[in-house]
Length: 114
Image (cartoon, rainbow, N blue to C red; front, side, top):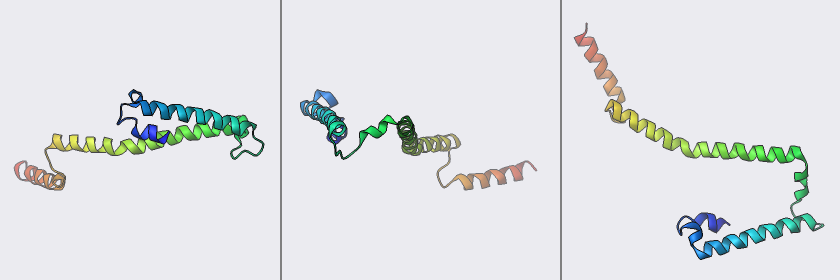
């Protein structure tokens, strides 16, 4: 499944035969894993704990919160970069020119509007 998610975009997802084959193998393996874990006496992961509604709800809520936090963390640099570029274009100042521009604006108003 990791290969499908990693390489899928490069080879146009399900237009590629090997991506389809790997997806089928992953789906069959996941179904086999769940059946094995539910019916085998000494299972590695006890999936029966998900019968408890509080535990299942906590896992779902935790997953949603983590998706939101990770998505926000991934998008913040893009938002701030775009906002800062717009600010610089509007003010026509460079990254290092903000304080210089403030100083010259202050001097201009102080000398000409006294």
